[in-house]
Image (tube, rainbow, N blue to C red; front, side, top):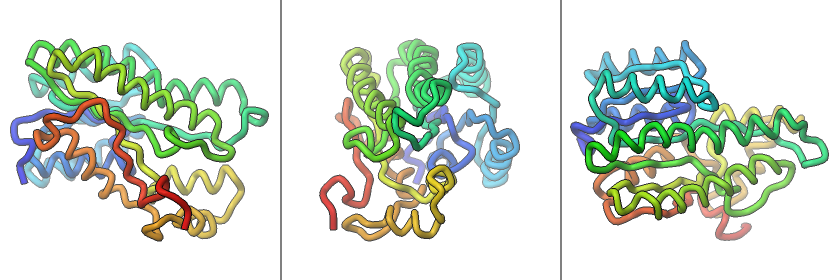
Amino acid sequence: MNALSGKVALITGGAAGIGRATVLLLAREGAAVAIADMNVGAGHSVVTEIIQAGGRAIFEPVDVTRVADCKRVAQRTIGEFGRVDILFNNAGIIRRATVLDLGEEDWDRVMGVNVKAIYLLSREVIPLMLKQGGGSIINTASAWGLSGGAKAAAYCASKGAVVLLTKAMAVDHGPQNIRVNCICPGDTDTGMLRNEADQLGEAADHFLSDAAKRPLGRVGLPEEIAQAVLYLASDASSFVTGTALVIDGGGLAGSV
């Protein structure tokens, strides 16, 4: 415990799913956490849980595709905690459709939340990290950023972009002691995964059963993905940058 004592983490999409699990884990490990999300009620609920457990946390309602919102949450984090050591660009959405069925508005929204937001918030946080001598940035990509999937054209394109954006940022900012990595989760039991079933018109139990067809025979848990983020955020990964860490129960290894 306390692997992140004295550290400050800013986490987008931190009110639910992988983001929430990561917020709670980093707080337990000693970090002060700033949560950015559009879900106001859920965001405040996570903050209350952390504070009641003796931790430090704030919530800021943020649309990560808006410059002003990204500036505001970065400045509030500095104002409350004095620094930003860890940036977890986790906010993400999915639209299940082929290019023929996908509307332009949905394409733009997926690319905005999944890719542009990383650029916008990193642009605000990196100068803060430079002043303090370094930091760790973790971006949420996907196993579908490394291998294509059916009826997920915009999502796969966005997550592939996250992988290479991560590598480019690692090259640019490694000399400044800023490590940049991404995680590539496979199917994880979150509200977003269940929403995919709705988008495809499938029963949730059938959809989850199909998603579990991988060597470990199940989908992941948000808490398992959070452990990978903790590793990349902590000094345990001090010589790791530019990597895409796959956490998918063996899904990319091959079919069963």
